Amino acid sequence: MSEQKIAYPYSVNEEVVAEFQSKGFVVTDDVFASSTLERYSRAVDAEVELRTAADFRDVAEKSTYEQSFIQCMRLWETSDVVRELSCSSVLAGIGAQLLGVDGLHLWQDQALYKEPQGRETDPHQDQTFWPVGDAKLVSAWIPFDPVSFANGAMAYVPGSHKAGGLKPVDITHSTEPYDILSDPALNGAAPEWVSVNPGSIVWHHGFTVHQAAANTASATRRVFTVVFIAAGSKRTKPWPTFPLDRAKVPVGGLIQGDGLPVVWPASMLLPPVPTVTGESVGPQFNSIGKP
Ligand SMILES: O=C(O)CCC(=O)C(=O)O
View (cartoon, rainbow, N blue to C red):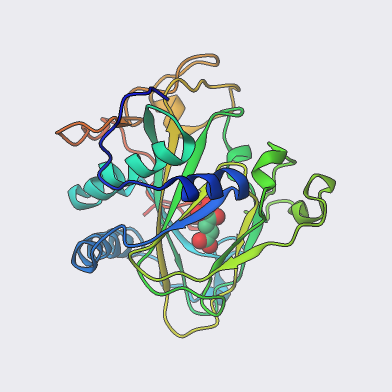
């Protein structure tokens, strides 16, 4: 990172950065005022409602993967208010400080709404899902409701990001998911559960092993996530990957272009929405077709 003092909208102190770098996850408190968060949550709720309007199934009728959460992706592309959140310089500035980089692109955003009786989210690493090698990647997990173990808190294996990419876990359950918690590289380290209130954000590194508890409460656990990738990262594999294919990023090419905007350093204007939109809901919706 350059020596010049950078003005971040939300400054993260050295201890928080050190905790992120050593454990692979960290909480930042009081990131958004409640009125701001309320506005964002209403916009995300509206998108989720719109995108799932044709789905009347109970949780029990859904596939194993769908029982973990309702997944709606790329909300910044269809809602101007969500665009403010996903491309927020507050978020991107924190991401840049945690990763220690000068530039970030938006990689993806999504709503992950865990319904009452929703099952756990299986332990996994995010980054092994994507052909980005060991690019620096960080995810912001933004709760709109108080979250504890009872309604779907996340747990993170401290230090697991240092293991790099382990065997990918098929959280969609199309095949038996790999038991990543038993991977020898984790030396039996136990996941740490993190309860959090709205306004705070939990950040995790792309290689941090994490999972979420089942929702045993009577209300939906509403969470929004935004993932940032360091500027200068390259595509490492040809696997079909919507954001990279849409932006026509070849193997070996820089991750940039349509739908992959620079969000740090911040600019005065929000980035334009891409010209082509993709699936609006997660892979779980494939079982009943596109709305
Ligand atoms: O919220 C969840 O249930 C899972 C979230 C997750 O895996 C992630 O944000 O990477």
